[in-house]
View 1 (cartoon, rainbow, N blue to C red):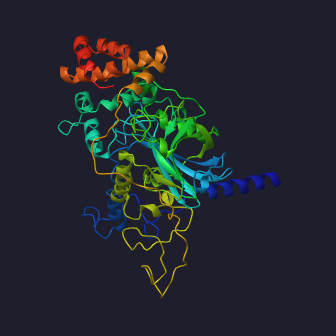
View 2: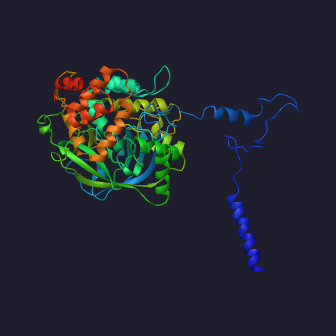
View 3: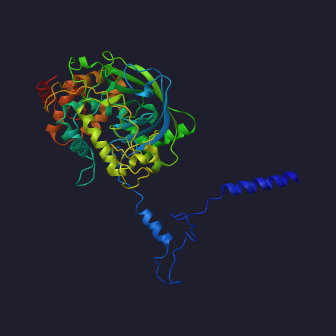
Length: 505
């Protein structure tokens, strides 16, 4: 009898616990009937006084916010970064003190394709990390490749327009892509990465992440160094060729998202070791190429990588829209000890990303929980849509004798030098050397896949001149690379060689 009564009680408790909370309207009042509209009698018109109907339709029509123009398709996860090496000699940034644990949110993404696109499409992949530091949020907004297609922000809208579907028929077209890239010979390095295994990762866990740009780290003495940030996957780097990607698409075109959710929820937490490369400012102009050019890597034999910490992802968002879709990253979100370099592409991104987030999410987007710093924000920003700052001071300006704020030294008092003269054209290009070195570093299988992957798109270019110009870039990078690709795309090798001979190294 006791056991039966106990079982009945347990079942009753479980039933009560699993019962859904009562459905409410946005004002918290309970909904009476969510299945039928209120009408004027059995055959009458629907009444405007049916607040639940009106509110439900209103809210449904407003469920979408503007899709990201780039990086629309993405998946995010929470975790932590643990510093293992003290960088106090290089930077004021507290997250780089050995033993410091910093919460993070990392959003993986593709760049070109829309929000609902298959994750099996070849594309650069974003690797954007928000570090919730004790001095505010630092956003490192990078990619899974260490370089990019262009080196100047003024070309970014053109690049994206060419990569996106045609404005006439809304179809992505290799003819438009390579019509633009034939004017950007420095893109050959990035193309050699993207059409290799990095272009379609087998999983988000099995790819590296790079800050791409050089940044400046400065210490409390005002000394600074140029630094690159490279995250190396402890799971290895694996990717799919064009045939494997098509097979995967037929099985699961959400393979990247599903893999991340399944592994983290199962306790298989992915890890990346963070390495930095350091360049002394006095050596900035001593190289054969411009080290601030984002189409170039810093060779590790010249700039060794030093491990400074490990990043671990250990928790998935509870709500995709609230956290992943509304997460907002901007290279302008910096903390004391870190500054942007003079990299032209980075300089433009410092403005454009913040501006994009203000358009997409509003001026107060950094008050959304996923974007909110873990430290108290104390500024004089005023009002605006969705302002939740709970300002309680009569003074929203500075200085003031009515409500004086505590006087603290500016954390940005350290100033790194900035010199130069007005110019537009870059001096040191060296467009092809690194692409050739990258090609020669690939295994025989990786070279075969690269040629097959590239030929699948470049081979569809109808304009022979555009095709031969592109092929001459690959030939200039490496004779074998260009010869094999010319054959695979049915190009004219004699023309390709002639064009390559006229190109500067």
